[in-house]
Structure formats: structure tokens, C-alpha cells
Image (cartoon, rainbow, N blue to C red; front, side, top):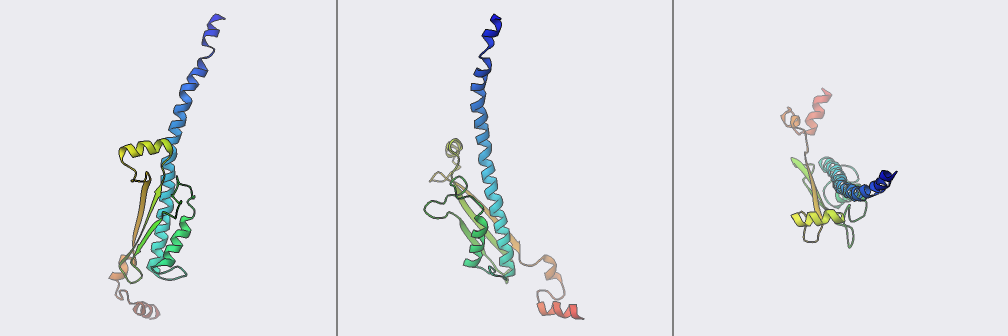
Length: 169
């Protein structure tokens, strides 16, 4: 009976040490998940914008503000919270498009800033992974050829009327 009294608070003491460590590990796993989610959405939006630039058709086709509006519409799935993307005082999305239907390749680059979670941010600033404002910068870029490689090797090349003539024969 006396032995039971001595071990009675042992579970509480162990929990007092384990629970903070468990929450810290959970927090450390949360930040990479947020960054991965941002990168996946950015990569998908950049790939879709490349297809639009390459075809130059449709409501958003072609270079310029309409393609950028399409990309911003796709990026709206990222929550407007600083730990996902900084939105205070204006949107932090930086979108660059190059190329078009007549070029050999198209490129879309999307850059973003996000605020690291509190404890993770301290560690990132100590190793120099954040910018001067204390934000983490991430960037995704996608480059795609306008035409597949076999088109240039075909007898008609990029001549659309030559392709139509070959199909009608």
C-alpha cells in the first residue's frame, strides 16, 4: 500500500514532460505541410497558365493581364492568412509570364511570401532562411514547349494548312 502512494503522481510528471515535446513536434510538422500546400497550388496554377499561353486561345489566352488574372483566380484557393501567404497591405503574389503561341516555349513563375509559425520562424531566422521582413519566400516556375518535339520533325512542320492538306488527302 505504501509503495502505491509513492508512484501515484508518476504519470502526471511524465505527461508534464511529454506533452510539450509532442506539441513542439506537431508544430514542426505543420510548417512543412503549409509550405508544401502552397507550392502544390502554385505549381498547378503555373502549369495551367503555361497551357493557356501556349494555345493563346480562350477567354484568358495570351500573355498579359488576362493570363495573370487566371493565375490569381487559381491561387485564391490558398487561404489569406499570413502563415499561408502574406496579404496585408496588398497581395504578395508575384507572377511573371514569358512566351506565347508563336515562341518555342512558355514560362510562368510565381513567387510568394509567407510568415513562418512562431517557434519555427525563430529557428528559420537564426539560420538565415527568411528575408529582411522575417518572411519565408517560395517560388515555383514551370516551362513548357509550345509544340511537342515531333511537330518540328513532321513533313509539314508548324504549317497548319500543310497539316490540314495532309489530312484531307
